[in-house]
Each structure stands twice: as structure tokens, then as C-alpha cells.
Amino acid sequence: MMRRQATALLALIGCFIALYLWLHKIGVIGQLTCGTGSCEAVQASRYAMFVGLPVALHGVIGYFVLFAVALVGTLPATASSRGPDLALALLASIGFAFTLYLTAIELFVLREICRWCVASRRRSPIPPRHGCSRCWICSQLQG
Image (cartoon, rainbow, N blue to C red; front, side):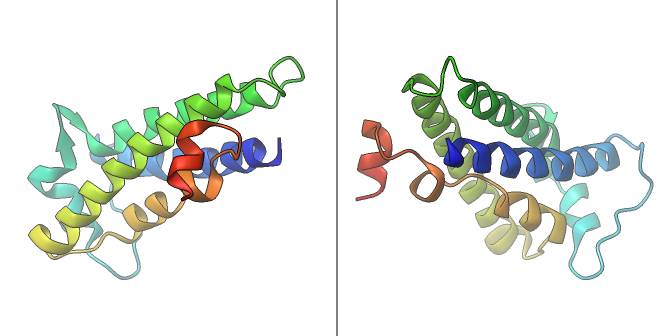
């Protein structure tokens, strides 16, 4: 139960960061407040789009789905069910793989780092750390 709550919290924070980046991408927010880093360069690159949609929108949707599944998993009716754990492990694994792809693009192709993108990725529930201990997927990931 605590892991599902932690996953829900991390997903909600990630959703808000991705929402900020998406609002910038669609022009609602004028300039990113980044401090250091190359947020504008990363957001303006051709890699800021994935299958025709802004990467940040994929983040908003992904984090929201993670949040919703984790929240449903905290309800008394599903607290002892393995379904939410399996769904969270699968969703977090997909998100983690996408995160690795985006990090590689920033480091090795663009050679630019967006501080907000890194913050968003740090909120991604990584399966070995936030997965369940009961399901097969997590037991395989945990070693």
C-alpha cells in the first residue's frame, strides 16, 4: 500500500512537471524558467516530438495513467489485488525505457541538458525501486 501511495505521489509530481513543459511547447507559457541548462534548445529540437505529439504530452499522459492506477490500487477493494501492481510494473517499465531513450538523446545527440526534463525523469517510478515485491515482473527486475 505504501509503495502504491509513493508511486501515486511521484507520478503526480511528474505530471505537473510534464504539464509545465507541455504548456511551454504549445505556447501557453512564453519562456521556460530553467536557471542553468539548455531547456529551450532541447524543447525546440526535432526530438521534442515523438510520433507526432510533443514528448511532454506523452509525459503528462503517462504520469497521469500511473497516478490513476496507483490511486485505484490504494482503494480498499483493490488493496490486496495483484492487478494494480502488475499494471504499475508494466507502465513504469515502459516509462523507464522511454526515459533512457530521452536521456541518451540529450546526452549523446543534442549534447544539451534540460533541467526540467531531468527533474521529470527523476520522478519516474523506476520498477526495481518502486515496484511490488509480490509480482513476477518486479521479482525479475529486483534480481
